[in-house]
Amino acid sequence: MKKLLLIIFFIGLYSTAQKASNITTRQELSTIIVSYDLEAELPCKVSLYVSTNGGTTWQGPLNKVSGDVGNKITSGSHNITWNVLEEFEELKGENIKFQVKAAIIDDIETVIIGTQEWMKYNIDTRYYNNGDLIYEVKDSDKWSKLKKGAWCFYDNKPVNGYHYGKLYNWYAINDPRGIAPKGFHIASDEEWKTLIDFLGGENVAGSKMKSIGTRFWVEPNSDANNISGFEALPGGCRDNLGDFQVIGYKGIWWSLSNFDKNNIFDRELYWSIGNIFRNNSNKQLGLSVRCIRD
Image: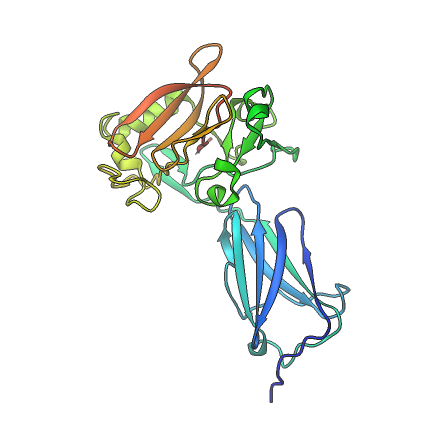
């Protein structure tokens, strides 16, 4: 007969690498809920482990779990529920610890549009490809004076990163250390044009690229049908004064092509129309980034 759950003194917490942080637990009858924040450039495989001897040995990955665990877990705040007595006869000890492991998985979710293969979500990394940190800059005045790579969450709120990815200035996306995942690159102006031409041109392509509905887009999200599978979201931008603008109303993506010395070609989608627009943005701005297969 299985014994009632018994945890003595305290539950310790442990995370691996720099992926999982702010780990907390709470017990509800015979289940334990583990909350954690995940910071990852790509979807991860998340696993939960337990130790009853302070981390000397670990058991797992645990199987009787539900919630934000398994494959394709993206950046944000998450919860895992473990049904203890479905997996263990009992759980007791003086120094019980939980470990959340997050590993980048190889299968990047993409969509084929014409002859191109695009990632289905915006970049969300905080690292260059050599492992160096990209600076997070929250202060508006500091952002407006930057001459090096930086990123931010819209309104400096991590929940916005969970949905829209991070906003990057030009210096980050143009850094030779790179931010695109292996096998991908940030699209050029010409590659954006190829996508748009395949979808019927600037007057209609936006409709085929915008995500459906008004969960993220402000009403009316005109003409959106997302038949391309591109899943464009209105992540807004950070302007050259460091102010945040137009989330819900507008999505803006960098290209890798210069308009002139200080400005770079971009692509813009709006809540109120099905067009897509070719514009240009100052290198100081923070915009979304989408990648295409090499």
